[in-house]
Image (cartoon, rainbow, N blue to C red):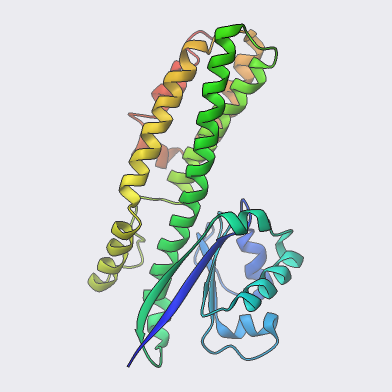
Length: 277
């Protein structure tokens, strides 16, 4: 017998302290830099204060939380309890960036299905929710860049140095999230089973990850084309060096991933901004 169930995912913060959550719920993590933490019914029942044999949660380090088989009251209760562990939940993000996915599963649901199949769907749903947030943020950066150019055409604005520096750093941080945190084009290594690969590939196609990734890269490229002609306006030598140092520190942290996925596209454009140093 098939039963339709739902995964609901919400963006609740810019990042979640996965290690602190693991300590609180006494859950072992898969490695030093885990992408997410999965909570079993036993851990969830400590928050909701009643047995929850068919409820599961996935908490992702980039601030998204996926709930399986939760109603709205239970979701709110868990999130408000979460605040005492990792800090304030951003309910403005919660209301703007959320998605759900319906699944037809055999009833009763088997534990293996929860651990693997649902985990893959939760991962895809969380990545899609985070992409929705990043796409909105990138649109905002793009609009600000266009306004900056418009202001420049009328005369150099006083806060130009600060505005340009902030725009460049925001672009870099956004790219690092896409590549290093979301790993948007990577298949999870631990899911080697052929059927599980098919499931993950289906989520990649369903949420159009490749198309959305390419759209982000195209918009970032356009942003650099907008910014580059103005990069030497109003910058003192010391300010340029400070900005370069901040960007280098951001890029070096996940350097291997940047080199693998983006060396021919992203880094050259950053370096172009500073060739007048």
